[in-house]
Image (cartoon, rainbow, N blue to C red; front, side, top):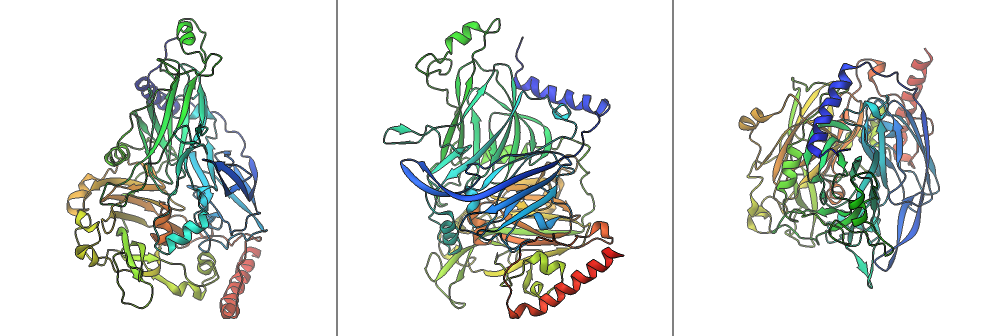
Length: 632
């Protein structure tokens, strides 16, 4: 039987869509109740000859895979046996009318204290594809994370692409020898020298790393010749965007962030932290062994430089004794020595990777994605109710007083900003979602996110990257509890503009509770008069995490149809810790069915003091009103 190559697979994807739309749907299976228990604890793991204490779920790194079917209900019992406060965020799960389960400490809930537990309950209606879960406490998501897979209600046969032989999560991460809570504290203090020591694929460092002559284990993916595999790729790293390649093979990208895309054939996948990509791979190379390599990219100098983190797994062909393949099978046999090897020897074939400082490969990868029209995908909203331009960059605040030395002085702290304001939590011990729901005085501390940056300048001027007189004029910033209120059902257009102040990093911007239509991207400064004409209003990709390119911009739209208090933040952990964050508050709609219901009865509570007595009265009054309405 002749094997398909990747372009043929791409054509088959289109044919599968036509077939799907022209046939009657198979009766759906009944929704199920999926239940998991997550025990968060610490354990010692040894890599590179060093034992490190890490915080994990159920003793696993990555953590357990949650597999559900669209429409299922999910209950995850989190038992916190660690010494840290914990929350779990279900990254990309929209949590429709259930913001209480979004898992952001002091935004949507009080954290789960050590030796306490809490059960997250939510539905996964209206979504299918690859998402993931992770801790939203300090930097602990570096080891507290795992895949969250939502399959179609009508089974794998209803995928808008050929049914794969197997589906495999591929989780790209990092290995840290430092305590991750200390890393977060360092970021909060503007200390940016902490870094991981290795990259990982499915928790393994790979044989690019060795200690005292012994190489690290690498993840091994066994494949059968001619079979098609669906790789569900997740970037769970704290620090870097990664390029992923498999020597001798191509990918057909079919989904991103649990939204189907028009099939796109490429030899490289680019993923920022937070992003997911589903890609088909056909085992159509000569049987042997091939490296799967993940390489971290970074901005070139004069940006600060870190080591070139890379890791590799191995794709190994099983013996194929079918007619016509026996000779190939004999030539690639592993033999008694366990060598195996690629077509020309025992050493796996390695792919040619992009340069570490090549950020254009990422720009083109993200720009080549378009949506596959699907019954679940609404049209792009044509009317826009609110427009915002948000600059993303670095700045500094004084440690004491309003005047200080900057440009790296110990008198100032480097912070990350949105429209030149760095986010900090209000001092209230009531989470913002509860304060919003019960209309307490804690909401008075919020500062409105401006529509525009306070100062217009050449945002992408590379001369602003190094410390100096030109950069120093733009460095001073402020801190505040940034928030923006939106009426229910509004269409919001955001332009994220990257800046070059002190660094020129890309920014993966993640919006909780909503997906975003990615209308356009560009390099340099956004120009509304010029760039609106470039908007894709027909089939833009739909993402929950949007990659804002290095010293460039991205324009998105989303509809505020999910009431609650939602986090919007950069998914580089150092940018998040340093304040590149805002809170989007979506008001209730006009009916009970479009309004946020009350919190669960077993919701975690925080400690309260006498100064919060007035807020407690408001909360109890609102609870009484809710009970009365429900009783009627």
